[in-house]
Length: 116
Length: 113
Image (cartoon, rainbow over all chains, first blue to last red; front, side):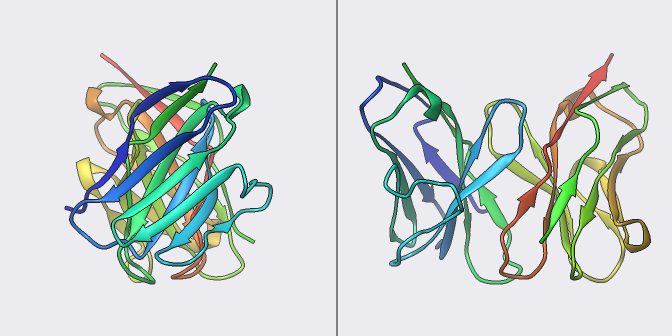
């Protein structure tokens, strides 16, 4: 089946630094990738949608300058949390879709970010 | 606008007992409905989905769900719980083929030996 690899699985960084999270589709071409944020015991909140070769579409309330998303190829999207603060600590999950319409979403295993 | 309601945050059942996780949705157009499972510190895995056609949908691991338009519901069931079913379960709705997925807040399933 389709596999989405997300790296790293855990990262601890100091306040003020930047962190990059990678999301790769291993055996399919992902035309669209989605980035979610999940707080403890809560649902997934969509942060942004990225299509290969174009700018990401951010959801209302998500700071595009803080959460930089790059989808430079059909198999890789990255999320960079810039100038991280403790309130950015969360579980970030990516998902990828290979086509349009009813194509299924495949999820990565998530990245636990802790900002100290 | 679309939304999903999963009442309660935690369900506990005995091993071998029926599992029933409730989901109600709100949508102005015919919805696509999904159930996902999440194990600790992992991403989401699709259990089953309803798009069109048969309203009773069978998924992986013995789970099934029934779309009831009159009740705007898509409850998830499994006849006999297994210890390995303990996880977080999310119901989700999408209102069109290319619209975004909206998740419910999730519900934790515990299985007692």
